[in-house]
Length: 186
Ligand code: AMP
Image (tube, rainbow, N blue to C red):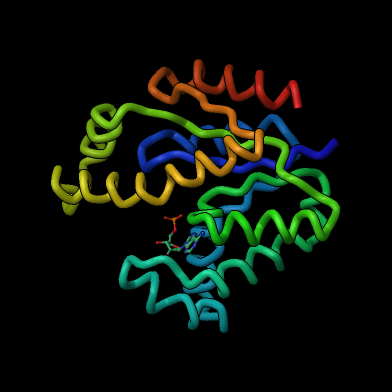
């Protein structure tokens, strides 16, 4: 059976690195909505024009636009082998849309991987990235905003029964060991 995954985790939780490991070992298409939006901005497509004002302001792109984009991507042939959503869903309305889209198309989510990391460690990791505009206050704010959006999704997938919480506060290879254990048992 194709593995259809969702990755959840706050900034600094190591989602991106784990996604790279997964793509290397499994025939799964990595779908990052942030990457798709950025590519559309760069090429100034119709979608890019619609998304630009929201992205420039650091806001979420409205659900109608984002959901339509994801539905279009998931209708392509390559996802039949399995897919991994990264950066989507970002809120419960998107999660509900995704469920409906998948069930109408005879698909479902096999696992949602939630990389859990203590706030203090996330803060240290983000500060360690050393970006000039990343003051402790900006980082704390980003974590709080993301947490408010993330936790309802964690609850949502817990209720659906596909949530796997992984301790992301360890070495990357130890984290990936647990990821493989989940994926190999799907
Ligand atoms: P990211 O790289 O995932 O942080 O995404 C970069 C930007 O793309 C975000 O700040 C949003 O403006 C937009 N974006 C990405 N994913 C979504 C989503 N699921 N819903 C709405 N906007 C999104």
